[in-house]
Amino acid sequence: MSFPIAVLASGRGSNLAALIDARAAGGLQIDIVLVASDKAEAPALRNAEAHAIPTLGLDPKSFASRREFDEALFANVAASGAQLVVLAGYMRIIDAGVIAQWPGRMINIHPSLLPKYPGLHTHRRALKAGDLQHGASVHFVSAELDGGPVIAQAHIDIHPGDTEDALAARLLSQEHRLLVACVDAIARGTVREHDGTVLFNGAPLSMPLRLNASGSLIAP
Ligand code: GAR
Image (cartoon, rainbow, N blue to C red; front, side):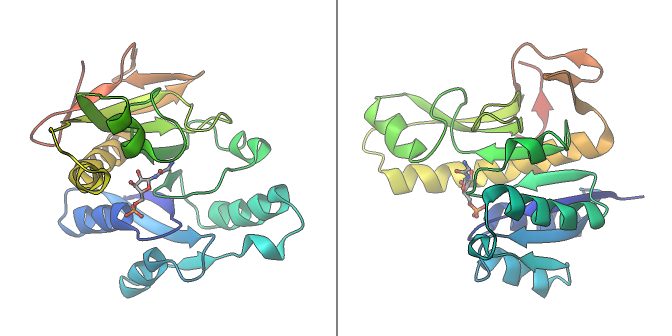
C-alpha cells in the first residue's frame, strides 16, 4: 500500500512537482492525498488539480487568528488520511500547538545548510558571507522556525561570480532530489524521528545524512 502524504505549498510548487513526477515514474511509493495552500492562486494547486489530486486553498484573512487558520487547515489534513505532512515552499509559520499534534510527521525543505540561515534570503546571505558551499536541508518540523532535527542535506559549490538567481536555480534541482529521497526514506520507514532525534535504520544520527550523486541518502 502506498504511503499517504499531504503537501503544503504557497507558490510555484516545483518541489511538489518533483514528488508527483517521482511517483509517476514508479520510484516513490506514495499517495498524495491532499495539496493545500494559503494562496488560492498558487500554481502548486493548479498542478495538483491537473494530476487529479485533491486540493484546498484557505485564505488566512478569513480567520480571526493564526491558531484558528492552522486548526482549520490541519483538520483538513488529518481528514485526508495523510501520515506525513510535507512543507514544500510553504511560507507561513505554523502555530506551535498545531505542530505539536504532528510529532515526527511533518517535514520541511529549506534552502540552506541548516543551522545556517534559517528564514528568508538564504542564497543572498550565503553569497554575502563568502561561503564556498551552499545547500538545502530537509528537517522534521519543530516549533522553532527552520529549527527541527535535520534529516539530510544536499551540498553545492558556490562559484566565483555566482548571482543569487544562479545559485537558487542550481540548488533547486538538488532540492528536488533531496526531498524525493527523504520522503522515500520516511515512507519506507528507514528514517523516523524519536524524541527530537533522527533515527536512520533505527540508529540515532549525530549529523545529517548526505545526498550522493545518484540521489541516495548516505550516512556522513
Ligand atoms: C524552495 O526553494 C524551498 O526550499 C523554499 O521555497 C522554495 C519553494 O519552491 N522554502 C523555504 O524557503 C521555506 N523556509 P517551490 O515552490 O518551487 O517548491
